[in-house]
Image 1 (cartoon, helix red, strand yellow):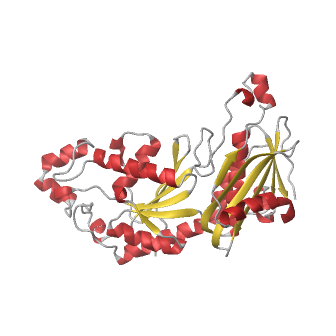
Image 2 (cartoon, one colour):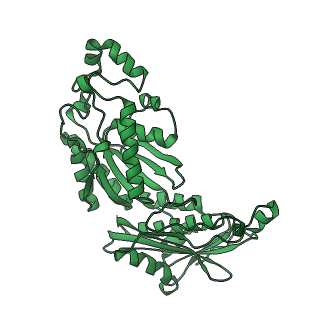
Image 3 (tube, helix red, strand yellow):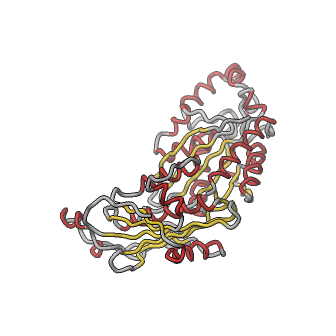
Length: 390
């Protein structure tokens, strides 16, 4: 099956993409490559293990990677996308409906990346052997691949605008083991999960890292289970990283079991230390420290009595973020943490003043999605979303 592309001149590229899961769902990976349509030369390749996922999720992840590579090579090129997944090809061509929510989300991302002049072609598996080999090397323990072998010549439209040829620019090669480059590449996705409900969160008490370490309530555990099921359906989470505090660890353990993953502990994702206010309600803190509370609400540099300022928390949370981005470049990671670290990470992503944290509300058992690109830019895909909890 093939759809007709929108007519247009310029360079033509072929995207070959594949995805697979050993177990369906089970350990999964994708492979993708881009060829020059005239010479058949491979211009770029990508392959990555994506954790526990279904075949369909892996296929879509391969498609998205291939479209990203093609955009890096030449955003104005016409594309022929070839896959042995009839489901993905028919859905992207608009012939089949997309009923599953996870598939809808992935299809939206693929359509965002696809140019108007694209052909969707279903091919036999034997004609997709190179992409299949890429993903199987990764599933067998090989390194992540994201490489642009060389920049192509400029498009006809670029020539008309008088832009320099790529041969006049510095060539760019993306190291597979690093995933960082001057070329826009696969973003690192951080899924910021606030732990489930505790007795302190129900009573709206200050609960930081310097006082009691309350466990989840029964409802809090159910919230974590719902988040875990949602992340498992997503099928692309590579790691689960948790604050060391009990409520976060309990939530992370529930999520990790659903993802068949291990929990890594990151101390700098702990909640703010609220000092003398630990365990108090807002009203109780105001009755004892009215001036101190007003000063705290006025400036992020002011700590609670005996506690930690938000400026101080920013320093350690930013350091934790940098470590995660370096260790999991181009992958999706669940960070199970608390209100303050989540708000601070959002401020960093949006490049807004830290005082914006006073205007955000992050409910227990919610997920916020941020993406960081290799060039340092970031975007917020969702904020504080909480699946329905029975």
